[in-house]
Image (cartoon, rainbow, N blue to C red; front, side):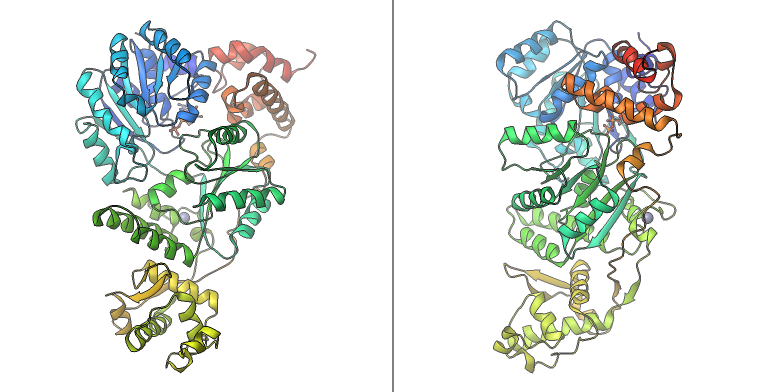
Length: 605
Ligand code: ADP
Ligand code: ZN
């Protein structure tokens, strides 16, 4: 039998396994079931790819990432691995060819879209060949508690019933304790060995800013810290995706939209440009990004509040898979809270479902309002403890001041109370703030609100500070919001504040930017820690890679990753044998690109 370490070296060109990889690979090679939790970029793919190459038969990979199957297969082919896929994008002819290869045992890996599992023809096909293992990628899709449930995933339990002796490995980059339990039970993996890695992504800098002028704030981030970088901007609605992409384009930033309302051709074309070209910004709804394994996404920005910490962590996790410094930036304001509460109130489904959505939102709000390390808060959500503050998030870099907001909270809550109890009226935040600020607006006069005892008692704060207070009261459950107009009402906990039995600590709104570690541009990042003489060589190698990728119609990273090119530039190998020692240069790529690399390194030699 082939040795996994040998496959790692010769096929993938890597010297050693990372983290739990070796233990996982050995366990699956030996026929064991595994549940693998590893953060994005942790190296999950090798955990099933190597066992599939070592074990007899074809490794069947179930993955929801239909749009990316072609790239995955291309990347494997570049390594000399025989891979194919079956999904709805193929015509029957292509499908038949892949099926024939599977039956003849001419594949190492077969990627299957989950909807294939619903078809009776699929198990019939699988029975005609030899399956070495089942890999279930993005396994959190089986969980209803999680944020990305796919009903087709429920069919996966049948595979086990039909092929009880074939090992199964389920993998995900996102799972709380609750999700993990649900994955294990739904996939019948309670008896499987669980491999849980740390979820920390130390190279990502987490920042959450109060939302003032979101588009301006975004532009500022892109211009000052990420000029020329590839990144993803998430918006909640299709129309804001379109508007934001258009606006960024007008500002001279190459930005493309992506959402479910675009026709599939445009979506595919935009995704291809994002993957293949350097420095493209994708503005998208959360329909975009799962499984995008572009390693050099330098930032993920959220212009709207994500619905859950799990979703947020998965989306931000798409930044910096190559381990280089990256930014996760979120702008969040009062309107987000009001809008999300409204969406929950009006969502379909039973009370339990609404309660679950509410819990998800509350955890997300707690993350936004924390005065402690963001990373500590995030990891705690996934059941991990950070022993000390991370030093690479906004609260660590610019510790926020907290202030005693008890009196402000009392003023605001008593204004809501007076409106509600004395006048039997409910209003939104804007009207209450106008009252506290003593503004005689038309609406204030119309409702006689200047006659309230609370009129004008809040002039010590300005409007945006008041909005910060309201947002935090909502986040802390000291205030409730309802209906289409976002009207405010008191909660049970409000009484404790009004009765002076509870102190309210608030985070002070600051508009300061997080100071940045040394780098400022893509060039700086990519060239970082390269010796002076290697920098131009690295650029030459990148230019060669871009040309080769274009010629072959594959993303640049399928040829070589930045990290590999960097090592080549530094080491300046003079022979194929020496080039073969570089991490990321396996036998197949050495044979295919080795000479071209050496020629690029010493032209005319
Ligand atoms: P995940 O699926 O967990 O997000 P990937 O499988 O895409 O992560 O791996 C992330 C990156 O790390 C890829 O570029 C991969 O080639 C690289 N990688 C994985 N394992 C190793 C290893 N043992 N040595 C060097 N690089 C590795
Ligand atoms: Zn921190």
